[in-house]
Image (tube, rainbow, N blue to C red; front, side):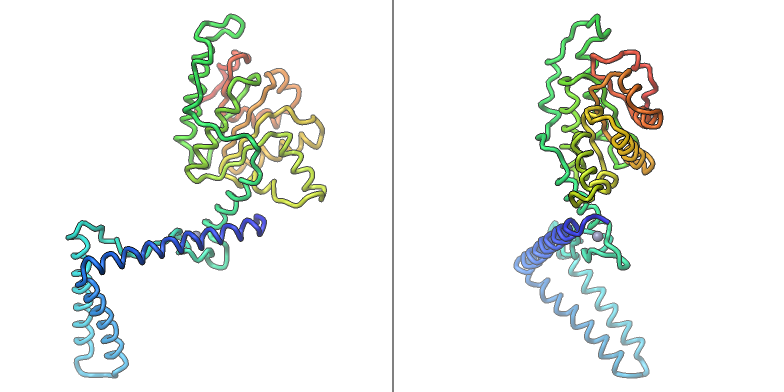
Length: 325
Ligand SMILES: [Zn+2]
């Protein structure tokens, strides 16, 4: 389970959201009573029917007890109908005064059957993810400028850079539109400065706005954190957060020191995400040859199980690789 500090933060968030909704409920109720005083009278009558039922039930057996109860029930329902009519006839939704909850699973209790509710777990992961994220400012799709890329055919790279980038740009936007927290991901290959980070951070930005938990950081930085936690120099649950977050964005694969340790951690990471069917976006400045020499087949095969986006300047032969979503 995720660190208790994040669980505490999550339960506080739930309490705050719940309190906000209760305030909204109270405001709505006061508004209706002020506009339609008859609504308040009906509320009193409704409460009276509940009391009447109790009275009959504890009053013991009478000949027509069931009949009396039936009558009170009918009265109760007719009052409720009148109350709903007041709302609906005045342009309100019939649920306008129903209790509001932040979470429809635990009704804001935070737990279900003695376990933390998914609303708490999700919020805790989100808070933990925020703490793990790199310093890079989030970017947007709007400020991604395609005119920056040449629209002339480039002999060396055998492509029109702007067209290639337009495709990548659209793939990234589609990734956001289709995002549901499951599935593969994107593997961005290309030299530095071609927009990989910009597009990754634009995706992160859009998905965070939609409430998904996203971790974005560079591979070397995450390895440093994992290393220091594993060897007891610091506390944290980095591995769990990067396994459980909705989207993991690993920037700069290949910039880490290539050691047995780093290879095994990279493999563990990719494997954890792929085997749980959780999406990733990984970017690298390495070219195809370098990726192949550096990473064993088991890493390689996981990288290329994702949709490959080639940023121009890379090996165009890859474009024929099976890249259908
Ligand atoms: Zn809940």
